[in-house]
Image (cartoon, rainbow, N blue to C red; front, side, top):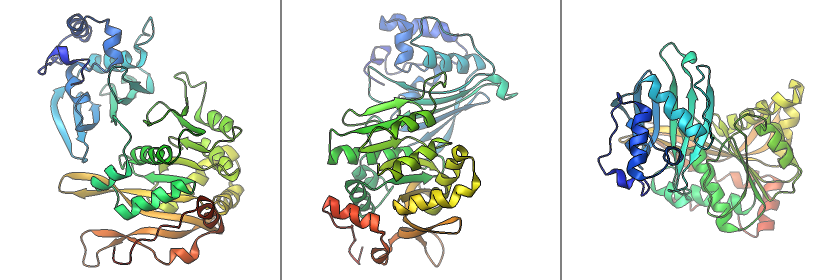
Amino acid sequence: MSDYFRPLGPDYHVRPDQSPMQALRQAAQTLGAPPSRLAANGWGGPIHSLIHNPEVRDIWIMHDQVIVRDNRGHETQTRIHLSEQWVETLAHLWRYHDRPKMPTFDEYGDFRSTLRFPDMIGGLRFQYAGRAFSAWGPSMYIRRLPDYPFTFDRLVQNGTMTRDIANTLTALVQARCPIVVSGQTGAGKTTLLGALVHAIQSHKSPLNLLIIEKSHELPTIHPAFRWEEDSDHRRQLADLAAHATQMGLEWLVLGESTGPEAYFVIKAIAQGVPVLTTLHATSAKDGVMAMARLALEKAGNGSLMPSLLTTLAQEAVFSVNLTLQKDEHGYLGRVTDIGEVISVNRDAPVMNSIWSWKPNQRGGGGRVQFNYGCRTELSNATRIRFEKAGIPFPIPEETS
């Protein structure tokens, strides 16, 4: 439990059948603080201990069931059953804790928000859907944000990547190469994006780095410019990304590309701005295709697909893919595919494979292998970037 809530005691527990506002007032009285202060610090009622448990990564509240997933991807259904009143109260307390008057519950409410804790490191990202979305009642997904940016060293230790892959990503950052991170839900795209930002700021700080997010999620080790969508959606990601292309940035970080903002990401790349972003895809090549398809939502002309892909090839965008793999502890996202876009064949990108997953011929598992032939296929754009940075393209030892 955080220092802020420590006076509540190590065995602090709220019964799910207790009135939410009564439980909140009792906790506030114990701490000698206004209820809004508790909400701002992530008071969680019956799931308080889960929210503040560093081993918990995800919490799902669906149909009164509470399911958790730990940092290794192992899922457990808890014995906690939350009423609709509790789900609605927690969602609205967290979302509107800083407003003088909290709006009434909206059964059609659907919002995503992030709660940063002023009295502790880290925070929560949550997605809430009101009762009108399901006959079984409101639901909520909660992601516990990391207390500090993951480093490549930490990702090597937990098995997300090998040391040689970490060396590759470090070199790509130092050479200012644009990188698209893709993967399945829960594979660790945002975590890897945070590690890339950490590597940027460790290599050169302070610098003109802009982070654009739906809500504050990426932790940083040094201050950075940060733009976020507002809660009323008057500032969309696409609008913010469009403004970013006019700023002469050293780095542009877009938390997630989910729509027309991808068009402005490609525009920034074409202007020579190194970009980091994430999106959903199942391979490095599919990540590039997904970026172009999302950009078409803004372009509105399907015939522009080859042109968009050509831009990504001319600027030699690197695509990194994470895959969820099962081990004895559960599921863990691993970097299994890194490729460089080098040309376009009809309406598909041609990739220079840097790292790729090689399954065991006898079945069961496999390993990530470096493609030593990639050295002769590197694009001119990548060669120039590494020459400017004064570093060699990282080649692991043949025996690694």
